[in-house]
Image (cartoon, rainbow, N blue to C red):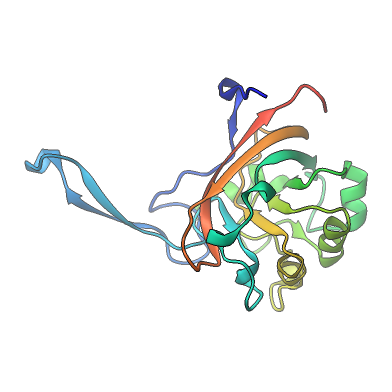
Length: 217
């Protein structure tokens, strides 16, 4: 199969010091600069493992779980379905997933109102749309290997004390793809390519992610 990258949708967010971030924002140091008389331009970046569009590996919540450098990349690359859940206000439930057309694809991206709202703010919101635990159970039941969403966390706000959704997904070896910009990505079936940095022993890593549209819905 030949992939046409001229139609690719880059759903990754740019990484920069003023970006939306859960905690400490990226820092950039200019090590060498041609304008300063150096032979080349060289920069040094300080970023967290959960910066920008990134993968949460099972080790994020499971002791002894797989780290990003040990992931099976087939879980991240292949057929993906984007579900339109822009009407959901706070928590995506199992019933919401079924109503949106959850199928048998192993990769599912949840397109919510986050993409046109809180994802575009430089500051972490108090409220966002996330996945409820029964929604996580439904994805596991459906055989999903990677679940993505358009915000800093897939967790619904109500569960950010014990992180039930993360516990369920990580415990079932479902990879979590967060901070996916789906503003210009209609619901449907795509070919997904996502390659996280192989940070040895890390629980998460930034992952450049693109979607290639298919003809079928």
